[in-house]
Image 1: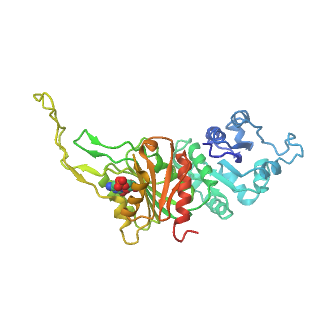
Image 2: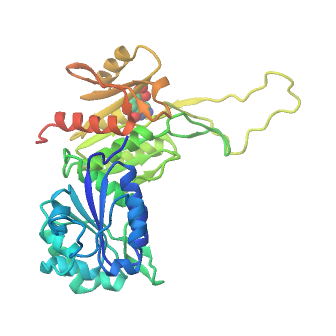
Image 3: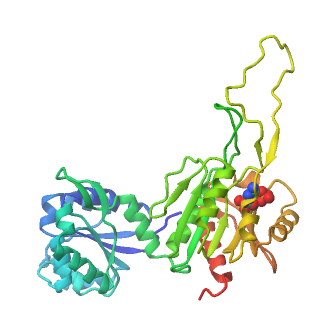
Length: 402
Ligand code: C5P
């Protein structure tokens, strides 16, 4: 699934060593289906060549305001009129100062001033330049002017110093661009999501777990973030990278997940319980590794006893001032019957049901929404696409959500 299909983006580069990351960024944007027109300041060409950016974007690169390649000689108008957004990455301290002042003394600054589309900037500079009073004044002025400021990140800088001012990584900027174009259906809502499996110890080296990959939960976290929500993710162990922009609390056992959820549930608007929580834990966890009995020839096996884990979703749904709760059910048979029953039993307004054999570890999924009105099946699609549809369905049903 290409996430920026039909989007036309002007990628502006001003002068900074982070220009090397913009080569990767343009590749990622194009990979996701965007048409990218690269415009560089003269300073940017000292850090990376126009040839590199042209090869990766597959389109001519513009630098000069007097470029004769555009028939009417108005590159600043033509480039900005066709664009869905302009992203300046890297945005140097000087370029941001120019934007604040409304200066138009080269092609990139002129087309920003002449734009009829949103402007996003990804600052990139030394930490002292970033924290300097004029830069901070300019950043808040840009935000007031409706410019979206992305980052900056923090860490080791090209100059050898460490601090704030690094340009966000290409994949982070890609996530920001994809999010930028999504409707803000959950703007300023607080959403708590659990994802992945839980892991229950048997002894210090053995565990009981399940085949949940975490993909659906992480896709929902991303979709909620894209919809403008403030998301907290509580995750069992998965092979997935922590999603950009979302605080992620890692847990192992169902009890730890329960405790983490209860510690974060206050003042949440929505709780989406996607995690495949173990129903039982081992009650007699051995403190040392359980050994085989060398003398036992055939059926010797350890006796495991089990204790019921707390039902996190039912607990949250029963809280006074509970958030609006959404559950998940992965069944292997009789999905409709079990899902309806589960939704009512847990006392929740919405439950997403799917067949376990279709969902575990797959990238596509087939789900149905179960609510008071009945069952609403969604067509099979990529998990990220399904996640966006589910977030839209939640936003539509959430009481008081405009
Ligand atoms: O009861 P069952 O496990 O089938 O219900 C699945 C739903 O309940 C999922 O939303 C899951 O996250 C949640 N659940 C829970 N705590 C448990 C078991 C399941 O929150 N101990």
